[in-house]
Amino acid sequence: MKIYCMSDIHGYLEEFEEALSMVLEHLEEEDTKLILLGDYVHRGPDGRGVMERIMELQYRCGQEKVIALLGNHDEWVVEGVSSIDYMNDMIGEESEDDDRYIKWLSLLPKYHVEGNTIFVHAGIDEDAGDLWEWATGDDIFTMKYPPETGRIHGIDMKVVAGHVGTGVISGDPGYHDIYYDGESHYYIDGMVFQSGVIPVLMVDTETDKYYQVCKDGVWLILPYDEWVGR
Image (cartoon, rainbow, N blue to C red; front, side):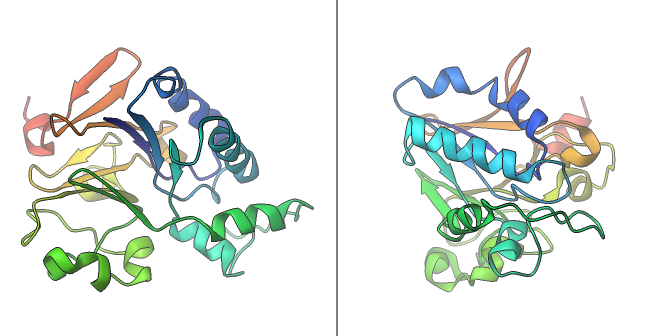
């Protein structure tokens, strides 16, 4: 199976459509899925438009084909901490459809497992080993910080997450591609509000290989240290 995934769209509908343009034709194929790792709202201009687009894709392709996970910004909306349009210190006007969006967000799962890959917005309790599903608190799934790198002991699995920008994780503010630590973690939040780009990761579960999907091709993802050393 080939799984395409993105994270941290944050209301940037135009950039989301650009990323989707590299994926949609593949969703018509068998054994493919799209997994979205959360944070559909806040920062950008059209959180409602992003959610509407995802809901439309789920209706057209099926929720087993297009899987949307919950992010911390989405959770804040569900909990009433902030509005859908919250951006910096500004509160946007409410829409008559907001209850529908909030209900949709409230039903989103916090993680998804496919093969030996855990897809999640922020992270898992890695100290729990093979008991991670039961030991990980809801706040860890959506808000874990700081992000962990290195091998996950006790389970032979990879984690694909967003939440923290790859420029932060790598220590290079100008880096907005996918970050692979060379062991167990792939981070895919390219900080679209700075970079204007939403990275697309493709997981081939049959070969256990991970690729970055770009307009000019599909490239095997190397560990960050190897990538910057080329």
